[in-house]
Length: 251
Image (cartoon, one colour):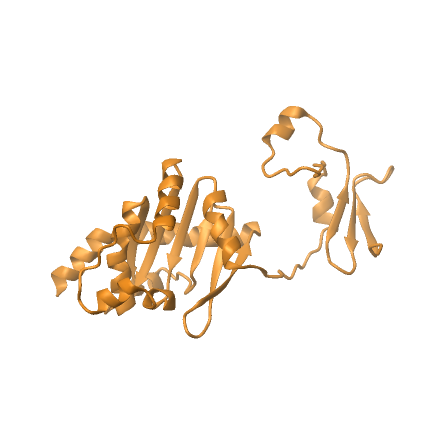
């Protein structure tokens, strides 16, 4: 079925190129203009896929004729697609963990050991996950987390503080931040990963604290907001070993 296109405008009053159209049904934008052909320029483009044609348009074309109000439609991916982000990243993956409990932790044998007061032996557990982290870290990629902790900490938060030993051993840098400090810094009560400072994976949980799906955010202004959260949290958080020592000293 042919698109219902609306001509919004052109950057040229003479030959009509480049020009800007809008699909009235899908809201998609179609821009046409001179093709970018210089091999050096093409080599520097990121994520240019086969079949895609880069074009050149003046900035004022988008300013004059682009939509002025855009309602973001959430892009939801399943957990398998989410898992693939941890191998496709180029340099960094950073996580904020803001919840007081995670149902997935409580279903594990290690959580049962921990709540019985038994020492948890992390070596050899989750072999596939650990192998992936080690392999990606060996390529020079960084994996970092800040975990927000209540005062007093919940059982789940204490479990994750112990679990940090396993994550650290495979290449992650884990830090902790008191919730009072997070609130003072006005950090959002959201769980998310930010990949390569350009893509945010917002984790959605149900009322029983189960992870159900993931929303991808790529709009630059929104990604910048999450990057600012990352910078503030990382600056004020302390390494998990230091945080654990503080807790022990207070007991």
